[in-house]
Length: 141
Image (cartoon, rainbow, N blue to C red; front, side, top):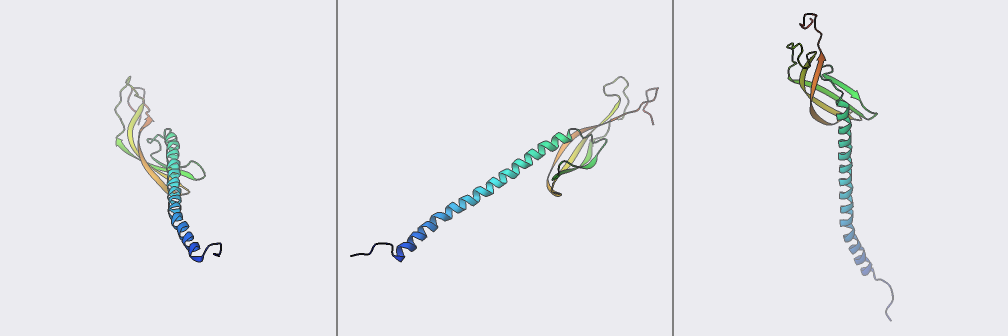
């Protein structure tokens, strides 16, 4: 009468089959985790960039060409501006925007997360400064 149960060889074969099926499953799980982490970092970067662009809407590079600002406990920005078009200095009494000097700037923005450089981008901004005129319409010194 044959004995019931598994032989040692059957147990080893069963373990080998289970092992070979777990390898692709574990590889797939690891790859999915890596992709989810990359997607989360990308989303965080996009949301941060949107918040930074909203902050930079208030920036006037004519008055603050360079600077650094802490936006939250972990997020800060640093910027520097380079004039693309020099300030408009001619006087046009009665003309449009006669009371302002206008210039166009390229603003290099570096984003810091936990005091480490995270990413950087560039924007173009208009800078302006009020002009002071004397009573005869000429710019004041």
